[in-house]
Each structure stands twice: as C-alpha cells, then as structure tokens.
Image 1 (tube, one colour):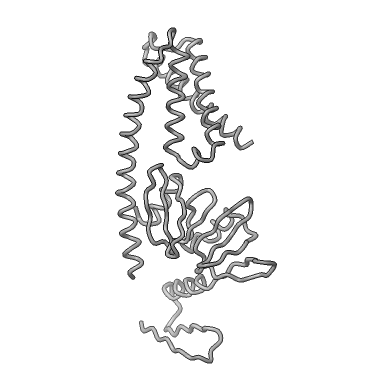
Image 2: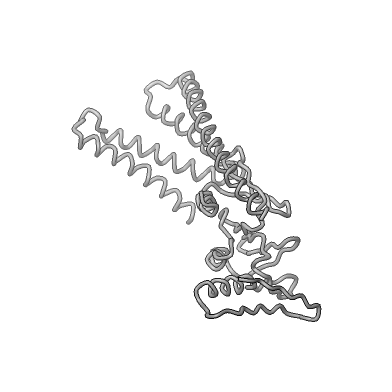
Length: 134
Length: 145
C-alpha cells in the first residue's frame, strides 16, 4: 500500500507538472508550443515509467542506501526511454552522447552539493567541538 | 547567585534545595531543567524492567517494529513507538536523523559527509549512525544553521 501511494504520488506530481506547463503555454498564446493529445499520452507513459523506476529502485537495498547512485540510475533510464519513445529513429550513438553529457552535468551538480555539504558540516563540527570543550 | 555543592557519602538520594527570595520565572526554568534531567523511561531487557535516565540515552533505533534504546554500552527494548518517543523527548536534545533513528545531540562527537549523499554521525563511544538528507535541515537547525 505504501509503495502504491509512493507510485501514485510520483505519477500524479510529474503529470500535473506537464499539464500545468501546457496550460501555461496556451495562456501565453504560444499555440505552436502546446502539446497534442498524442504528446500528452507519450508524456503520461514517461511519467508512468518515472514512477515505476523510482518505486523499483527502492526495492534494491544498495541503491536505496546510495541516494546519488539511485538518482543517477533514474535519470539515465528516463533519458534513454524518452529517447526511445520520442525519436522516430533510435541510434545508440545518440544515446551514448546523451548519457555522456548527462553524466557530466550530474557530476558537476553532485560536486557542488558535496562542497555545500562540506561547508555546513565544518560549521557543525566547529560548534560540536566548542560545546564538547565546555 | 551562589552554587553550593555539599558531598556526603551517607546520602543515598541526591536532594537539590534552592534558597531564594521569591520563586520567579528563572527559578521555574531551573527547576524544570533539573526535573527534566532526572526523568526516566521504562525499558525492558531479558524479562527485567529497568528505569533508564533519559539523559543517558545515546540513541534510539527502530528495528522490525521494535524500539531499542541505546545507552553507553548496552541496549534495552522500549514499548513506545519511535514517533511517540520523538514527540516525548524533543526537549531532551533527541533529534530524528533518519526514518528509524533518534540521536541525542549531547553525545555527538563529529559529523562527516558521505560521497553518496548522506551524512555519518560519530558518537563519543565511537558508534557511527547515518543521517538522511531528509532530516538534515532539522539537524542543521538544531545547531543554529
């Protein structure tokens, strides 16, 4: 039941975001950018996959314990599946290039988060040390 | 204010007496703190019931629907659920650090960032606990960050 709730939450949240963005495009009169029913359905399938993958990785203890690895797997799987669904012709070379650049971006984001965490932890450790000395 | 501590080997139970002109808010705060300091929690171990001082708890962990209280070198089982203890003991420096663990900040020695996005807390008895990212904002808030 808990996993079903998690699955439905991710599905509803991702799909609601897509519908909201579509409505925003209609609102600002960019009719060429609005999504067709087929596009919406394709996006719905991808949202379904996002929810499915997110729930599945929770079942693997190692991935569940390694947050960044889990997110990386979700990101790559979604990118590859989106490429497969959206492209008329599917080339592995395109996928590899996509994976390469996504990995670069992911590593950059991870490094920034790591630096920020390190900065906070240094401040916390300084406070603990000061308190323990008292 | 003067603090006088008189040691006597014959005394079985510690008695704290406050001599003051009038019981005001400061005195009330001191008495509240002192009574909190000696609050206990009922736990069991090997079919025996124990009263554990809350101040002595290092951390509390929930494993397979059972709640365990860890003191320096021992652990006890408690009938309370983790969420009940969380609200009961929030005044005692015990803070939620993951879905299944409450940590007493009093016994924290250091914190370390792990490469996979979590944090590791080392206690003064050298035990290591994992802090989830989800509970990090509350943890940082406890240190005024």
